Image (cartoon, rainbow, N blue to C red):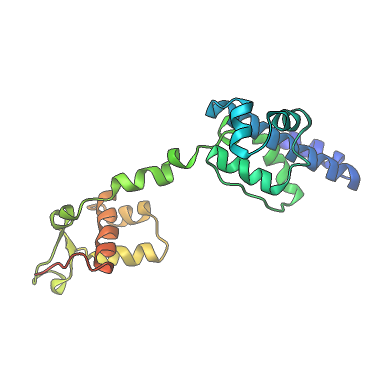
Length: 203
């Protein structure tokens, strides 16, 4: 990274060169992404063209000459075809070294929504309603009858408050080692069910 930064300091002193270099990096990365994603998704140029509503010749032309003239609406169509999101932002020139170093497989071919672990795991982790009665209990002699995690004196509302305050799962589990990730998920489901008036826990 230091070598890249040292070389850029000289190359970017001239304003015209600075913008030309930045545009070249953007164009190269975008072209690399579209090529890598097409190959990773197993799409031919004809199949990709059909998905974004253009001709195969248009795809070939873009791949050969770059995407600097590609309209934002066309890029949105590429994003939808690949199952990813499009991000457009203005950046400082100081982010160029990181962009240049970021030509990696992970960045060039991001996972589609269905394979994104951030969203893929959540539906499977949500417990059935019957699990709530196994993991949450109400006892008059514990925390004044408030719903607590079974076998503990930790009220469910406390965990929900911490999540609402921005604490992560890891931070909560460090503070309450007797809990597991499933306990936190159960707390969220418990709150959702109560909000929808689907279940009522009785003492």
